[in-house]
Amino acid sequence: MAHTVSRVCAASLLSMALLLPFASWAGPGHDHGDEAPAAMAGDGPRRMPTGEVFLPKPAQRQLNVRTTPTLPEQHARVIELNGKVVLDPQSGGVVQTATGGRFEPTSQGVPQLGQAVKKGEVLGYVVASQAPLERSGQQAQLAQLRAQLSLAQSRLQRVQQLQDTIPKKEVDAARAEVQSLKGQVAALAGGIGAREALRAPTQGVLASSTAVSGKMFDAGALVFEVVNPSVVRIDAAWFEGSTPPVFSGAKVVSNGKTVALNYLGAAGAVRDQSLTLAFENRELSDTRFSTGQLVKVYAEQTEKTEGIAIASAALVKNAANQTIVWVKVEPETFEPRVVMVEPLDGQRVLIKSGLKPYDRVVVQGATLINQIR
Image (cartoon, rainbow, N blue to C red; front, top):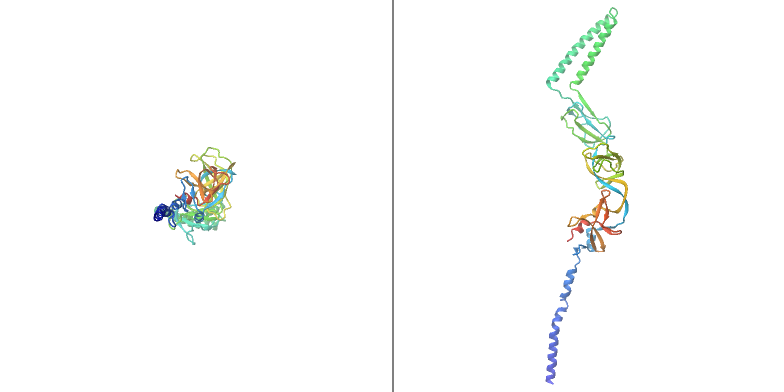
């Protein structure tokens, strides 16, 4: 009986010894086997070995990620041109001094930039400058002419008293001499210390001014520039041959706003190895352009092309400096796609390859997704 109890106790102790390692491995609170897969899975934004990006829904909302479905459509073929805002010859004008001299403001002071002006309004004066010797010579000549005028007037009075006894032609000659000397005196007196009035050539606003009280200007110098704020004229350069294509219109982006332009035509002469293409808009409302401003003109041809139009903000660069977009392939997975693009209107681009219809492309937050490592 004692031997039987000893064998049962030994068997029990052996069973407990064999089960003890498994109990410590799978015991409550010590499930080390499940910890590693949990750490591997994670729930934060990360880039996968395949190049895709895992971005949970909360992170998408925090980064303000927005997507849009794509759909191929017909669009006008667009050419991107380098343009420059120039002064419109029909609605704007320049104010130059013909004589040169010292600038003097009007009683209202020197005109300010952006000030509205009317056609013919006096913007200032230019007083002709003279050397002392030249000025003294003119004053001496003026004194001599005035003395001659006084003698001629006295002679005219005498002949008028004797007009009944002398020929009429002597009276007429004396009268003509007085009139001639009066004109010479008036012309010379007006030239000494005369000032030239600078008048606005058209109605508009003052776009540029080099006027300062007392400043000296050479003859022909530009003093003011007046523009019509509701009109913009843009000259673009065409380098691709002597005959540009036919354009149906154009667009330009300024301060985030797209402005439509009318195509006026091309110059007939080559300048700086390029043809000048003229565009304009004469109905601007809340958009302003500055003369000399460099812009990008997106000229639309009559020819159509098929492609997917997406916002320019969707384009980013990968590590190989390729142009890519991020496509949402699963609710929390984004895939990079290399694309070929063409300009469209300054705010959108045309995808020629790399996307399929109804792909959901990230149009907001693409740069943030591209930075996830």
